[in-house]
Length: 113
Length: 113
Image (cartoon, rainbow over all chains, first blue to last red; front, side):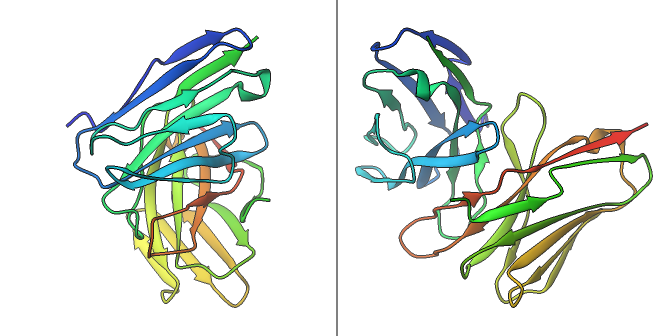
C-alpha cells in the first residue's frame, strides 16, 4: 500500500492564482483531513471529511475549499492564493476518525509570492 | 489557541540517555496521541492513550496521562541517534462525528551519537 500520497511536493504561486493540492489514500479510510504547518504554530486543521460527500470546516478554513467525491481522494483548493497561505500542507487519513490514529502524507510545501 | 503545549521546545541529549517530553492541554479529552516528525516528512503515529488510561507502553516508549492535571508525558528510553525528530502531542475531543485532533507546537529532540 502507498498509504497517503500528496502531489505536488513543492509549488510556487503568485498572489491571486488558484491551484489544487491533491491527496489520495489507498487504505479505504473513511476520514480524511487537511492541516497546515507553520513555524511556531504547530499543525492547524483546515477541513476534514468523515466520508464521501461529507465535509466540514476545521480551525482555519478561510481561503480553502474541499470536496470528497470518492473515498480515496480529498483535494484542497486554494481559490485566490495569498502570501499568508505560504505553508506546508499535510493530508491525513484514519480508519473512521473516531479515536483512530492519523496516517499522514509527506506534505506539499507551498510558497505564495 | 493551541489545545496542547509541549515542553520543552527543544531537548538535546546523548545517545543512551532517556528523553522526557511533556504535554499540557486545556479542556477535557477523549484521547491523547503522540506523533513523531522527521525533517521534511509527514507525521508518524507513535501511541494513543485514552482518557481512562493512566500509562501505556510501546517498545522504548512510555506515555503517562494525568487527566486531573491535564498533562501527559512521553518517555523515550535508551535513546538512539535515529530518535532525532520533532515530537507532537495531539488531543482528541470527540469520538462521535469525526476527529478534530489538535496538535501542539512540538518538541525538537536531538540525540547526539
